[in-house]
Every structure is written in C-alpha cells, then in structure tokens.
Length: 372
Image (tube, rainbow, N blue to C red):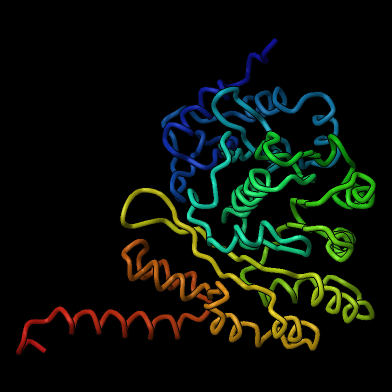
C-alpha cells in the first residue's frame, strides 16, 4: 500500500516529460525542481517535507536497496513508467534529509543521425576490436551517445553485445545482434567483477558504463587487447586529458605499461559538451573527435599527449575535429551564442580571435560600396 506521505511521483515525472525536461530534483523544504533545456526551474507545487521525499523514494527503492542506502547513504537505480520513459535515479542524503535526482531516459533509442552525432561513429561502431571512449562532464550526453552507437551495432552486425551498467538506462531489444544487459548490484557486484568473468560469456562487444577505478580500467583495456570492441566513459573534457587521467590512476611503476597498452588498443576518443541553443528551444552537443592514427599512438607511447591537439587539428580528412572548431561552426551558423561557445572553448583567446575575425569578414562582405 502506498505510504500516506508519498507524493504523486508518476504525475510529476509525466509533467517533466511534457515540458521536455531532462531532470527532476527532490529536496526537503523546496518544491520539485525541473531542469528544462539546461536551466533549473522551480515548479508551483507545494514545498516537500523530509517525510514526503523519504516515503516517495523508499517506495521506488524496495527493501534491499533501502537497506543498502541506509548503510552507504548513496543509491543508484532505474525507475520506469510503462509506455512513457525510464528514469535514472540517484538517492542521497543532504542536511540529514533524503534527496533525489531523477534523469529522463527516453524509451526509444535514437539513431546516430537523429541525435546529430559525428557520422564517423558509424564507422567506429563497426570496428572489429579496440577501446572507444566517450568523455565529457556529467549530463553531457555520454550515455545517449553510447546507446545510439550500441543500437547501430545491434542493427548491422550479428554479434553478442554485453553491457555492464549502474543502473541500466536505455533498454536494447535484439535486432541483428544479441544483447545482454547487466546491472551492478542487481546482476553483478561491480564493474570489475563483471569484467573478470565476461570472457567466458563469449562477447564480441562490451559496454562498461563507467571506468571508475584502476581495476576496471585495466580489465577494460585487457578486454580490448584480447580482441573485443570495448566502449566506456570517462569524466574528462578532451582526448589528451582522457589519456593522462587513465595513466595517472595507476601506480608510477605501472604507468609505462598502461601507456603501451593504450597505444595499441585505443581506437577513438569522442569528447562532448551540451549547450543551450539560441535558434530554438533545446540543447545541442559540440564534439571533439580523435581517431587513433599511428602518429597519435606513437605520441601516447612516448608520453607526448600535449601534441595530440595538433594532430586532431590536421586530421580533418580522417573525420577528426577539435572542440573549438565545432564550437566555431555552431556559433557561426547561429545555433549557440558567442558567450556560450567561448565558455566551452578549450582555448578561449584563440577562439575569440577566430570568431571575431569571421564576424568582421562577414560584416565587410555585407557592407554596401563606400561604407567600409
């Protein structure tokens, strides 16, 4: 029987979907808050009491998760409303009250084209082996990008795909491929535990929801090294930082070995960030794309990752692009504001000079004779 204190959670989440929101925040002594097109907006509902929030999320969690939450004070899970959407839920404590954030996960997995992702992802998805990393800050669209990539494999290759997620977000039904999805704490104890046993499950493609520690990283790299196509995410902003972050997680005496393994296994790093649009409601992603060419592999091996940016700049014919180039393209086409593009730039002074030069050139071209 529902708890008398619980709030009508499904109704709130349906409202979130209707308003094209991405997240709902539940916090004691505040009304529910929606994130819509990147901005937080307070709803007109009454403020929530600590008892209401606790009763609501405890109904969603169930006895086992409640016991784990009360022990660890953190809990991740998925929640579904049939026929509407799934939601990734994080439950936490703040100021001795229970809080929660629920992120919308659409039921239908959109394609690479529908999402406007770099077309080279279609080629990357069909690689026979190696490590592919999708990176960016929290909420930048990494999970959505990986879901579209897995869906492309599912539609085009008769392979066995195993995903290890915490929690399972997008649901994949078998198409051409066979897909098994495992959830941490439900189907396996940890990412590392699942990866230790995955070789016996005859996989062709492995998705690791997040590489959180050096053991998971080592096992994912080893899986790629032994002939599997491995996808995962890292919370970094560009390719060079991603490589350095992975190497730095390991003890100094092991770092050269990890560099050597990355130089062999890494196939691509896709770094992304989400920004509000100015041409219409919504958000748009900007991407950096690094493809692991022999020259880039050599830079990884020789600990010269600071030179990777230059390789990406000159790698357009291989479908590589820098984040700043994509930001400039989005700004010049009127999709994002100059201020927003500048705030996301990896080299603001250079971006400002290039954006200003382009703007001045357009003004000169548009000027009437005698106005210049």
